[in-house]
Every structure is written in C-alpha cells, then in structure tokens.
Image (tube, rainbow, N blue to C red; front, side, top):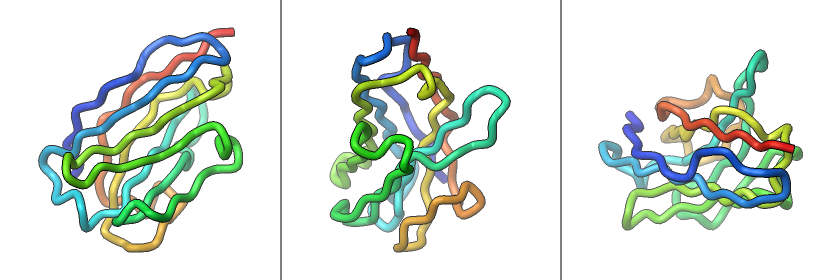
Length: 124
C-alpha cells in the first residue's frame, strides 16, 4: 500500500511553481517504482511522471516534460513533484502511486498502490 502524507497542493497562478510531496509512511519505499498521476474534472486519470527505484531514471508525459521534475528520497521514503511554469490545464487532482515493477509504466492500471490525491488549481 501507499499511505501518504501529502504537502504542497493548493491554488496558484499561471506561471507559478509548486512542489507536491508524498510521504510513504507505511510502504517499503525502496523496492517500488514511484509515480505521479493526475485527473482533471471529466477526464481520465493520466500519467504525469515516474521514477525508478534508485532514482536515476525518470519518465514524463509530453505535456509536462521540461516543466515538471519528479524526485525521490529513499532515506525519508518521500516522493516529490516539482512543477514549474504551471498552466491552467495543469489543474487536477494529483495522485502518488507505486508498483514493484522495476520498469517505469505509463498506465494507471499498472499501479499497485495509490495515494488519496491532492488538488492543484492553477488560475489564469
């Protein structure tokens, strides 16, 4: 399971930066590939970014590549998403997720564990 305490959600303006954090307090963090997904109103949950177990390999959706950075701290069992140059289209509920596969997937069906989600709203 991914039982997370999340920080960093909220309301920001277009062009601002925001960092989301997920503390996997009840998960053996190191053996899991970690992810961020998001879901906007009326849309399906979509892949945002993934990071492998050691943190040296990352993958991003085209819509956020170059603006978002995913990172992990295995000693603190924490996953981060640094979001820069935010756009109104980034408005969504953001979820951390995990699965034990060593390769970075892009589909929500591949995830074994989900966080509860945090709302990010970007105003114009």
